[in-house]
Amino acid sequence: MLSLPLLAVADVHHQICIDILNSALPHGVQADFAAKIGISRQWLHRIRQPERPSMPSFDLARRIAEHLPVTKQNADAFLEHFVAWQEAQRGDIARIREIRSEHAADQVLFEFVMAHKVMAFSKDCEETNRQFQKMRELGELIVRNLNYQLFPLEYVRACTLTV
View: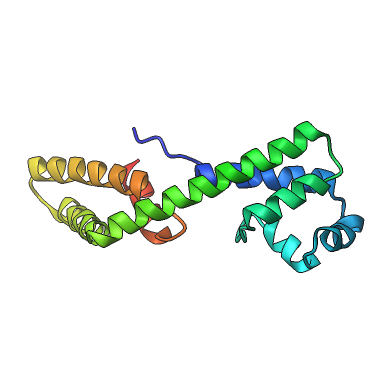
């Protein structure tokens, strides 16, 4: 059975950064904190969005960590998870560019859909089993290599049809 990651590594690190910010900055002090580090309240709000995050520069992340009203250990944890979030995002982008540049993603997705069609309408049991196995292998490849944020429909299709 295919085990699906519930969250991408980048999302985990980003969520930890958000949790640290939320615990240190209650609603009443966010505008003051943003002004203290030299950004707008809206920019701070965008950084803290789990659905559509805006990634600040490392310099801004360092200023946030320095001015957070938390222990040095928590400020260091914020910065550490921020760096891990950046690195994970870069890895995802590089992997997607590699897949897209070779047109492998389009080919894998096409083969996946065709295997599903053959499997669904075949009257030959052996052919159905072969296509089902091919779908599982291609589905696992899709789940491992395609970013669900860039290819949401294909990712969901691969998850639901291969489990």
